[in-house]
Image (tube, rainbow, N blue to C red; front, side, top):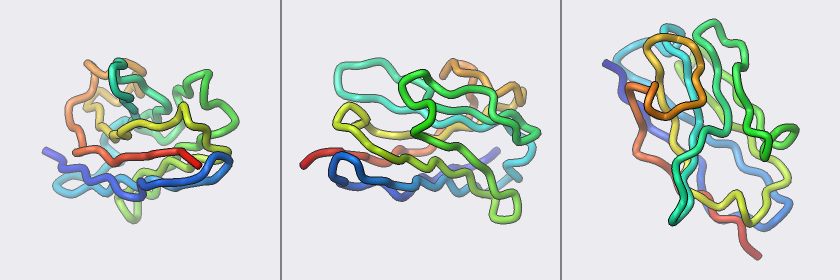
Length: 124
């Protein structure tokens, strides 16, 4: 079993940047595909980016292509989401998740382990 803890959220002005981190314990993340999801009030949870178990990017949501970058540091057992040019519509709780099958799915039901989430608020 793997435990995931997100950090790095906060309040940022439009156009600003944040880097979210997802630190894992219990198992090495290199055994899993990893995804970053977000959920805004009244909306469904959506995948913004995913990595396959081999580390290759498998998915970016159209709304974040060219704006967000997902990456993994196996030595630190941590996955990152670099978010640039943030917009008010990026405001949400962001979650990282681990997928045992390793596909890097965009569907939240395919993920087995979840962090507690970190709030990102983009506002002036």
